[in-house]
Length: 430
Image: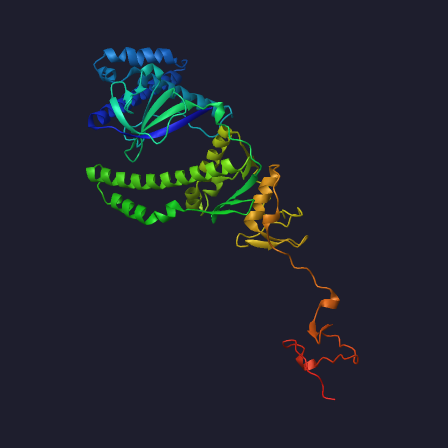
């Protein structure tokens, strides 16, 4: 299984300039290859092959005055840029065949793009120095902040500059089969929501951190400051960086929360069931900001790849399963309920159910997991009283309201003027 590990890089001034040249050269080769293929398509000619484009746009272009500066960067970076274009075309054609979701045609890259990336393969002879630096060809030894050890020797490294101006090195490694966790017994279903980020079938509720909502005030001020700056000015560039850094801080906090929670669930449970939510549809409603704030898709993807790595099982059930309408005890479908109803009673078995816990139990059952529905019940249901037990009690004997008790035997007659009161009664004087 291929995994990607990302670490923060801290290049110095000359190294940042060298990386900027690498980003620019890779972008130029990508755009030249895209124009060449689009020109051939418009003329009705077959697409030029990658080998022909490499010879024309890299090898021969370095000999010209207009593209002589392509020799200032590693040739592997330029070759990988052509591979990226091949991947973009392949994804687009797969989408036309119906094998992939919506995917647009390849487009030209702009030097004003906020995210830039170049990739080095083993042919580039990059290495990790004994001192812990990342040695890149024609760039130098870049300082890296290592947060963990790599499980194996990486095959490629991608250097990324994000919108906030931060540099990262991303390694592709192969995991080893010895990382499978020992089997455990618990199985759990998860109901994802907005009020609570996740409700588990065992009764546990995890609150939504609301990272974006908590940072809205700071983001608002930074965005207002950006809107006041003149376009094209250096002050506008500085203000844009502040906005990007504020958004990056929110995204990092959300990603950290998803990593911690997904790892905890994978370690504690052998099988996990989640619902396949229509995130794009919900994002077109008035709940769009809250839906993007919780990040359901990222959390589920973390669960899936960690389950595949550690020998666990994650199952997605259909989004049209009536998990909130079915009683998890008796299986009777009660029908749809408004969102403000959080606790409801089953008319068939009398169970009082928490809406979210009941849905989590139904998610697990729909996936075929063996979970108990005992946590879905909030309290015992109301049981109708027997006729002989209804009414008020006087002198240790039950008395049904509205039916006078027989006189004699120490029993007293109910005072009709006190029937609607507190239930007390008086004896008539003899």
